[in-house]
Length: 399
Image 1 (cartoon, rainbow, N blue to C red):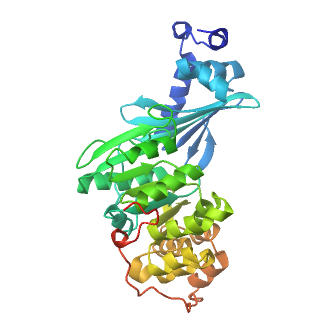
Image 2: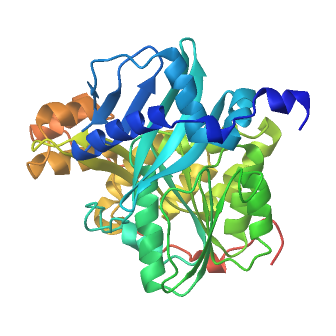
Image 3: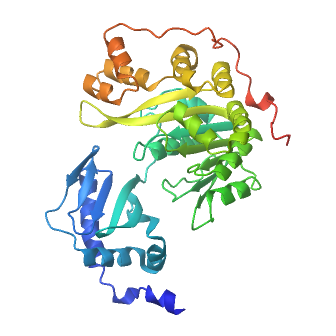
């Protein structure tokens, strides 16, 4: 061990784990309250997010030195890595029923950490109240499906539910690349190999490149963070694989723009053409508060149609929302406002909650009043047949 490494070496035998025990007490308290996140901050009280609201769990302050000791007790041999990188991700097994995704990081007062609960049991689509059209993505043979939303909107849970359904009804080889692994899938009908970035592979792009040589049918990419990963994901989808991934984007239009904007101007037409050809769907979600005090995902769902394909190809992304709304009856696509309207009509959410989460509050209010149907478009191709991706040309020329 060199002097620099020894400087941050943690002698586990000298740790009492008293601070970790304290954190575990508050983790249990949060679980009992039905919370989703425990927030730990040096020189502050413990807090938890319960039904979307941050609540204090303690009255005593978590001292700065205690927070450093807690980091050593939690990370042990990875403490040096934490000091070097200033933040670190890991999964913490609490008991046989609960695991947590953890991020530990430095801030101006010292060490902070956030524990996000990961349910052991993967909820099925019915429990999550996912729209029926989402089950159609389970049966796609190739292409790309994206699940998007802000942090904490339930993307990972929706994705896990889809993979679980595939595992139940298909006989495929699924490779997941995650940072870190959250939901653990057991082999049922499928073989599932789950790889954690940092432990089982060095990066998303490296693992994705390797996956193409590992006989996969389905590849889950935890997040498309960079140009190389996006390019590889599009290539995988274009050459006969079904790819699932997530982005931190708020709706379908922004998702498409974000992907294309990752590339230099001279490459954007190629990427736009590729994406228009392989995109099977985009599920964008926002958690909204229900009247009974719970939370439900309002979902914007883009489904591949000839119109959607042409709008992406022609750089007419601003027309996508209208196209999704018009395609609801035939293709089961929907905008956020249509989803919110349905939840409101079913008595699940209040008018105030619908309005505060709407993409176009004024339009939604008109619809609630029975006024304001969307105008049609002269460019309506919704009655054209959808060409299966299996019959499409591969723009990479690798068939």
